[in-house]
Length: 328
Image (cartoon, rainbow, N blue to C red; front, top):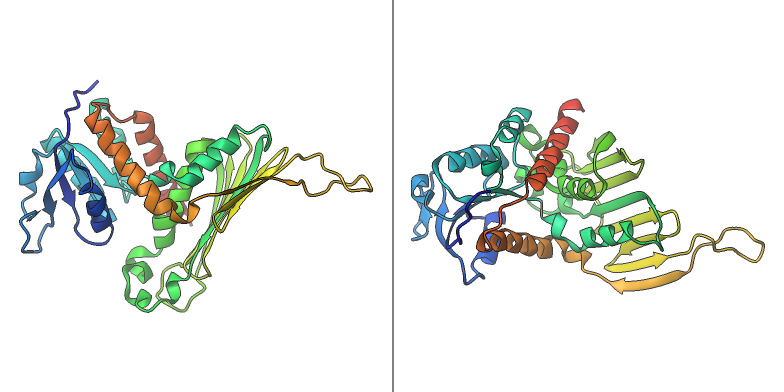
């Protein structure tokens, strides 16, 4: 068991886009102070920004929100040279070799690392968990997730990093789908079969703008994930069980049961809607990000190490994404 000290000083690697979102959240805490913001080369007039990474080794925690390809090297640098705790954005690694090196770390080192798969803290995650334990829905047979919007048709997309097929051919898989895959792995365990179908439907850029993943878990349950930058906005989840089903669309959760519902002729009929509730799935990214940061800082404040099982799940999801790309 490691000795966790109360975190006071926070260091942030990255300063724009997602790093800025994290900074806005971090500065809302009174028990923690962002004392360093690191960029390797840019000279920026700001007392918090530094080009000297060595000055950050005495921070209580480091938040890594830099490009994906840099995550592994930063993790290893702070593991080797400091005693700080590490919050690292997903994905942890960009190669199988890097995953193997992280897996070889000692337990004391793994206890210090938290990977930000923040959908684990989302309203969607809670709904899936509740459905698993619902006798009214029954045993889960299938889960379908559709999350799409029209980013590929927006001005500027063609010149963005997401549209660059040379460096980010599978960007939607690595940026969006990875969250939902990790969420399903969290609740349903080990995958026995997986199919990855990437597509391109817009005329913008040369990376995939759509992907579909079909999953079979060892417990027999199947799942489908469809993500796209080339469609209208849809956030829809369907959970099908042996006694009923639940659906989420337009921030409304509906539950239908029981299975044994019949029409006047004795044939099976659509079960009645037995539950309707407004939920916040449209805001699941924003809300879950806040909850994920809170989880990280609360663990440090309470001297509670991070679970190795969460570490292992994060690397397992990361490895599955890499294998899907490599085996295409």
